[in-house]
View 1 (cartoon, rainbow, N blue to C red):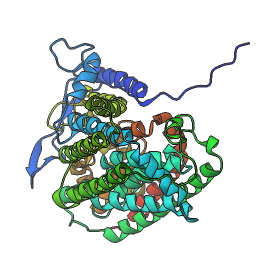
View 2: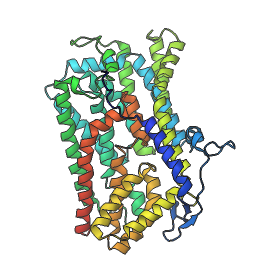
View 3: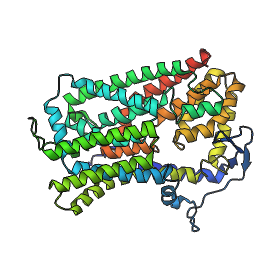
Length: 485
């Protein structure tokens, strides 16, 4: 009797294709809708009472005119947006950053530097994961880190696997931390500031409660990664990513436990890498650098390190340097495909522009009407879960704020809730589900860098996030009871 194969969790690409078929079906029987839009302080905002339904507009199976159809999904999603965001900008960013780290890893200097650090590790190594988690959570809260986490994962994944942890630990310390910080931030410029502006609230208002939430959620995350990392160091085979982490172990096991001697090239590459991280941090924090500038910084770093490696004989010729760049970029192509499919699903539904006919506008309108019939506590909790579900198709924090807050803010008034509660429900729902949904470009990019699947990530992070989502629901309810302002 043949053994039945164990069910396999569909990866992000398969899941999004299934979601696309469902979205295509919705266009046949759910009418599209539009809202009137006004511009306030440079931000496009929909008018809450302006919804108008239009007849259902079924999407084509194949659009031979070059427009949107189910089978046009991948290409149309891939070419959507500009260099500042959406698919084009994120895809270009992923390929450039992946190529840059292909060059860095090709020198072997990072691996030897990690081995040298391990040979001199102190007895306090168990504190490393909580410390990293704290720093990245702070970065998410203050600067709204998202896509930037991909670059840091490229450094942390090989480092932490070499130190006895796994790639899931690295993604948790980096990406999970930034999103917990993002979701509980008191000053995030990409979500809280925009949502408070649309809701007519003073910027940074309600900061004390959010600070308490950030401290609590960050502490919970620090304990989680400390406990998990400690267990994996004792029993590496328990890791869900043990097989895929073999890639990093194969690139590390050639060194022994003694401290390797760092050559001049190794020291120069590590110094340049540190200087590059500082340069990028300076650009993001003081100059407002985003995807185009950060990608250019990484390309510059790759050029300098690559030419240095060629000078010291690490690369036998420039063709070898080019091949390392191509290999690094190729490793992130699956992430680009997922980002394109996710955007394609949104376009299939009609897009996320409230002024254009879209099934999303209809779902948004009827969800708001449903909330209107609930009590205060149930409505507040439902706002959080509605924002969480919407994040599956509108993963941009600023985009979701512009789309939902013009409806949720006046709805909060009608329900007797403070608008601050509506903003809190939005930011928690938007930020926390970034850790789970396969439509998050940042998450998919980090997982691609770590060479682990979305299914493994979900099995790893699912129980922890179930507890976090329950606590977030409780936080919104408590805010309602205390009259949060």
